[in-house]
Image 1 (cartoon, one colour):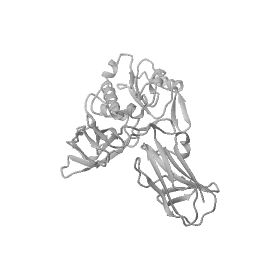
Image 2 (cartoon, rainbow, N blue to C red; image 1 turned 45 degrees about the horizontal axis):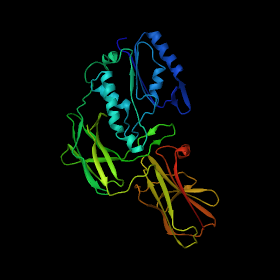
Image 3 (tube, one colour; image 1 turned 30 degrees about the vertical axis):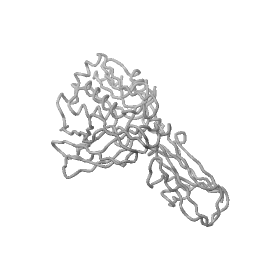
Image 4 (cartoon, one colour; image 1 turned 135 degrees about the vertical axis):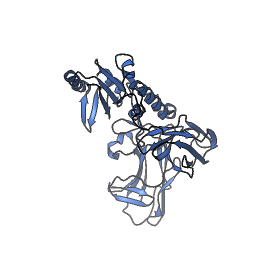
Length: 390
């Protein structure tokens, strides 16, 4: 065979096994046996790309001659932007499509992943390290000779984006225009967005233990000058530096990012808490039918979480709230669909109490990892409770 077998594994992983599906796993030795059998029967070379958590540890168990392996991280977590489907393997594929060899693509993806993570260690107070690795038995020399279908560009990758917003300082709550210029020689720009890394975020984990990059995203709109895209950021609540990187996607699925992050320094606001919080506010401990009842919720560092608000009735059943005074069906875990803001009260109830069964009622506010089954992420909840009597 003239070309090696290129094999990409992108999913969840542990230190000694791969996840094939929900509750379905394959150990590293089992996977190695499959790869060894293929190469022994075909005498073909192989390039294996592993984009999972702990992929560097898995890589060490799969090394053999005539097999190059690229891992998205070392013996630690791998990070993905789930909303925009960005991560190491996407960056690597983009580099290969630009005509880079595998070694150059590895370096390109490593740099782009580092840029996407930004100041995550600082904003989470955790030692966030993602160090992609490679092994080809020749210190990268073999991978320098490998191109995807040849050493030429296989698609028109002329998409480029440049920030027109400069770093500056603003007061908390002060809006600021965000602008970027997009260049493309062929095709159509589908969308442009800004990814913002706040001064503080919570490291949100999904049900598989994979980090969710909980970054706010702002969509930009095209102006009369078709190369200029813009939006208005309403401003930050928390004091500190907000890092902004602009991204653009064309109709071929290519994604480009601005080279350098814009830093907006916010002062005059509130200091962010060390971790995500949720608070329920109810004025009284006891109420009677006909009384005015108002309940509010305040969340902090809620990026990357779905918000659930529910009231547990005296009989043990619960009713979730979809919006202010809007209830879901009995015992249906429906997430909050109303407006959400950081460090600002949102109103759960504002009404005159009807005749209700007497007893204890408890309001719950729950931040649960986004796009996950709320009952499968109990260990990762951020929760508050407030009870009252009727």
